[in-house]
Image 1 (tube, rainbow, N blue to C red):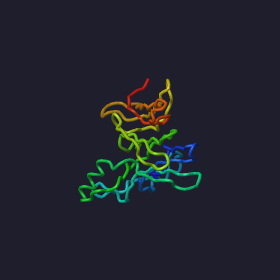
Image 2 (spheres, helix red, strand yellow):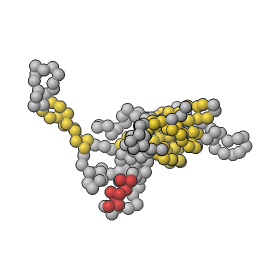
Image 3 (cartoon, rainbow, N blue to C red):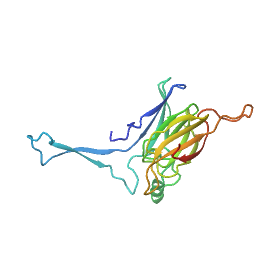
Image 4 (cartoon, helix red, strand yellow):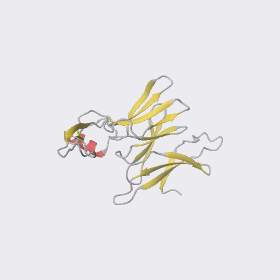
Length: 218
């Protein structure tokens, strides 16, 4: 594993449903050892061999392995089964361009070749596409993986796992993200719609529909 499996991004567990969610991606790396020409057994700080890595080549911008390149998997721990596996987002623009140049059209979503950052709430599974993905926040159905809602981030993709908190009766979701080109990193905060008034018939509650974003929350 060269960083493609479930790594430090970890996953998310939902105690109410007994589901566990894990983000992973297919990112093979060639790893080998090469002899150190300066190795000296008397030198305790040198090693006889060092690790050499190389990326698996691509063909005209397309990976050798079939998509999805990144995915989110939901495990139903009550049954010990995989409940769903979905791509980590849509197909990135550069991959769409490569498929189009190869004459391939109407492809299903490939997902970003990145590990999703996950947060589970009462009603939804929230996910960014990770530091190597598109700058989009998604809200998925916790049991089916259906993409219920998504919205673009102000600048670059997320670099940290989302967290959530309540303040003065309103729920927020916050995560770290890259700033605009030439700018510093930033925190992005999203608000969650409050519960509807009694008798309105709307959908609400903690983990309801995200309503917007603001950088650097107070």
